[in-house]
Image (cartoon, rainbow, N blue to C red; front, top):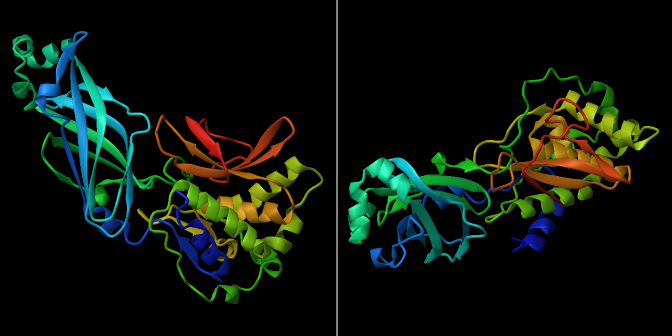
Length: 355
C-alpha cells in the first residue's frame, strides 16, 4: 500500500482524458501464475488433542511465478471431513508479501475441530484413532477451504487436500471493489442538453490513455480518486455553480439528483476497476460507485465543501466493497450515494473507513 503512489498520482495529474485502470497489468494473466498449497504445519506430529478438540496447525505455501510482488491475506479457513464442515477459523491480520519469482508461507493458523463434530461425521471409531494418535487416517479425509484476498483486489476461494497444489483461476474469483452495493434498476436518464453549455467540450477527451497500477490497493484507488477530483475540478466548475443552494443539505440533495438523473449506474468489467475523469463520466453518462464518488467530489471541490470518501464492507466481509461520499457537518454528516435511490440514505455497514 502506497508503494509508488507519488509516481502514479503524478501521472494521473497529467492525463488529459480517458479513464484510469486500477486493477493492474492483466490481473488475469498475473494471478493465474500463483500457486497455493495447504499443508499440515510441521507434519501430523504437531496435531494435538486438547480440550475435547483436535487442533490442526495449517500452513499455506505460496509460489509467485511473476515479475510482480503480491500481497495475500487469509480471511477464512474451513476444514471439511468427507465434505462436511467440522471446524473453521477466521484469521486476524494474517498477511504475507511474496517477492517476484519467489515462495513464501503463511503459518500459525490453528484450526480446532471439536470431537463432537468428528464423531457426528466419522462415527465413534474416530475416538480410537485419536487415542492412538493415528492422525494420518483422519487427515486423509480432510480438505481445506481457504478464502484469500490477493492484492486487496481479488477474493479467491479454493478447496484442496493437504499437500496438493492449487493453481489460482482468477475467473473463479471476485473483485473487491463495487460488489457490496449496486443499483437496483436501470434508470431512465434525462438529457444533458440543458447543461451542455456548462460542461467543457468533449474534444478535451481526445487522449485515451490508461494509467496502470500493478499492485493497487483500496487506499491507492481512493487516493487517486481524490487527486482526480481535485486536478479535474475544472470539468465541473460551471456545473457546480448551478447546483449550489441556500444551505448545505439542499445543495447535497441537488448534487445527488443531478447524478442520479443523468448518470447510469453500470458496474465495471470483472477484474477491471475504472475511475473515470469527471468529464468522461459526464459524456459517457455512466459509471460505477467510484465514478459517482469522483464526480461528486469534483463538484464539492468547486463549491469549497469539505468531504470524505467512505469505503465500506457489508455482511461481515473482510474486504471493502463500496465507496461513496459523506459531507461532515457539526454533529453529523450527509450521505451522497447515487447508487441508492434516495439522498442521505446509507446501507448499514459491517465496517467502514473515511479517507
